[in-house]
Image 1 (tube, rainbow, N blue to C red):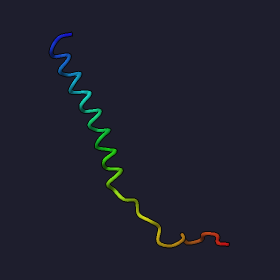
Image 2 (spheres, helix red, strand yellow):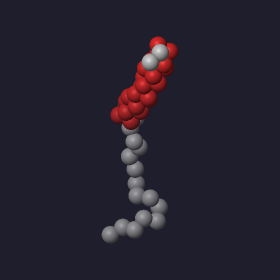
Image 3 (cartoon, one colour):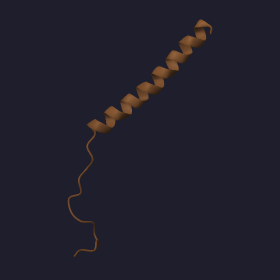
Image 4 (cartoon, rainbow, N blue to C red):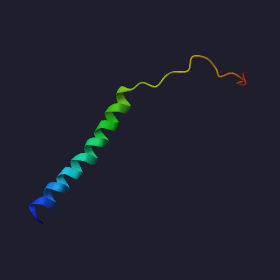
Length: 45
């Protein structure tokens, strides 16, 4: 392979894996809002 092809391949791999790592970190750090009350119109026992 030519050097430019290897450079582009490494760059692309870093972009893909970097996006995966960034999304995992974002999912772990962002908290999901907890529901305060039951939704209006919910059936209760």
